[in-house]
Image 1 (cartoon, rainbow, N blue to C red):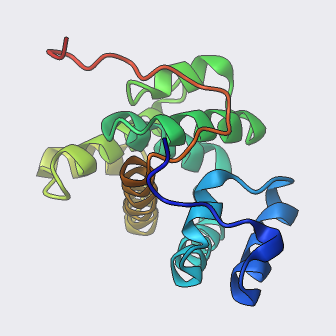
Image 2: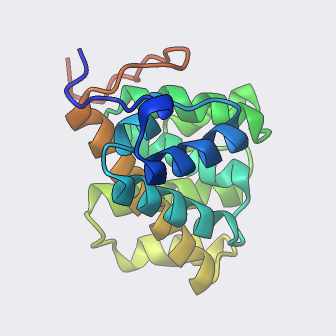
Length: 184
């Protein structure tokens, strides 16, 4: 049962209604996560602004979705795993890469390096090793793109935590979280 209420766009405050309308136009739907964020238009606006800014960067939508999957798995966020599986498909990520992404892997070695780096950022809370940084650079990522990977991690950790705290009701097809090593 959800622990944070969702906002009905029809009865939302004017600011929340405007923001939810942008979501509806962009996605063709208004996911429960954004409807819950709309309880504070500032939260929804911040999420949309951060997401929109990263969309203007050099990382493709497909890579950003794969990064989101890594964060969802690392933070055990079923809502984000389900949402980004659908959004990843829409962005052109193939089924094999959607599955590989659950273990921070991809068929493209450069994308795999970005996913491993993102996982290290999450697991090490930003205190990555020199080897982690060297590996992502060796895969061809420059400091700007590395910054975008870190930005994608931060955005997705926010949504993972938001949905975990709120126990947001799933409105995407469910996807099972993979078992973590050493966890029964």
